[in-house]
Image 1 (cartoon, rainbow over the protein chains, first blue to last red):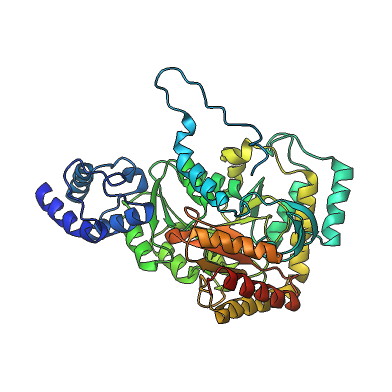
Image 2 (tube, rainbow over the protein chains, first blue to last red; image 1 turned 90 degrees about the horizontal axis):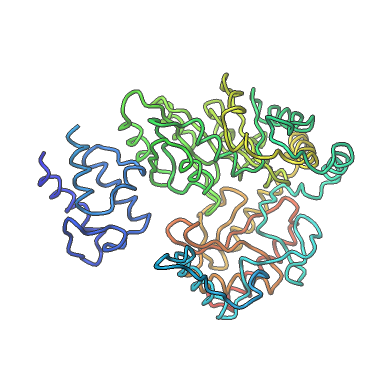
Length: 80
Length: 417
């Protein structure tokens, strides 16, 4: 799976959590632009983990602020 | 308002563009100011001027029934417990002024650990200065770099802080979700150490964990299991050892964390374990090493209380269950929404529609002469505002009836029911 396909899949996953329909690009932030609280983050991360059969620990989540960083991280993890 | 705010605000004078480090608290300061401006008594600044018994005190000048103390077994005024504390003050002085590993281990600390070993039927017991430090110390020390801690998202702050203090990878799962826990454990890289952290009773809603199923899953994946039984000790299980004992899986728990500040009726924390290498914790666990030990009077009261719970606790448990069931049913019948559909512990959580009405209800109850805990986000799950009631074995049947009457009047006045 390449990065573009990873992004397409994650875009489908984020839909139910993007309640205000914010337009998402590489620099969109989860805390700022999308206003994700900790519970939303947990549910969204769980959805990604189940889709790609990976773990994104909280330590790794702390390094991820933007959409682009998330797609990069998931792309790297799913390739392993 | 707090006594500390006795002078006008003096803005910090800073050089250049350096931000005031307190600016990050501005939203909370504003929320609190708005709440108090609405005329509500400050829910987080209550003073108990006199304490009359485990269930009654003079709070902000009023004779008040206490329904938010976690003093489940009512041991705080037990004559034997008090006598043991007084004797220890006379014999050993007011404090140890030292760490457990230096000059802070007295005979009383050893006796307290012996009492814990007997209470739980375990080989090792380690007493910390608070329950918070027990979680902080054990979790941060045993799960190191490259290890994984898999924990329930609704875990207590002390568990999260133990994770934050250590260097392990932290993986939370949805509250009490066995499948979510199973999946996450299954994805951990081969060869990594695994610690599963669970609680017997979750204190916000008063619900219990399906420990039998969860511990079986943890063991299937080769994980060690730590269970915090702070809110079940003395009350749940045939010997009051907690939810793991009640569900018949205490032997599969590697570490039980507990506290003296609830059923035991004083302050302090502990970990009991059968791990053969457990004693090394005393040298490597920083929150244990770098803290002064508990005062002799505290360990004496704790040891006496633990032994009394062992000998006579079963007499009180049935009455405490009756209280919990009666309060739960009464509040349900009045139309309140509760945290659990059935009573599962000595905690009954009443769900409030929002913080404003929660605070108004809390104040109305206080004016009726009832103290409960107001819990609000971020301490609560799903951003709920809760009025948490914790029952005591010393609450009489009559008192529970009085409490229900207070809830009915306050709930109608605030228009929640």
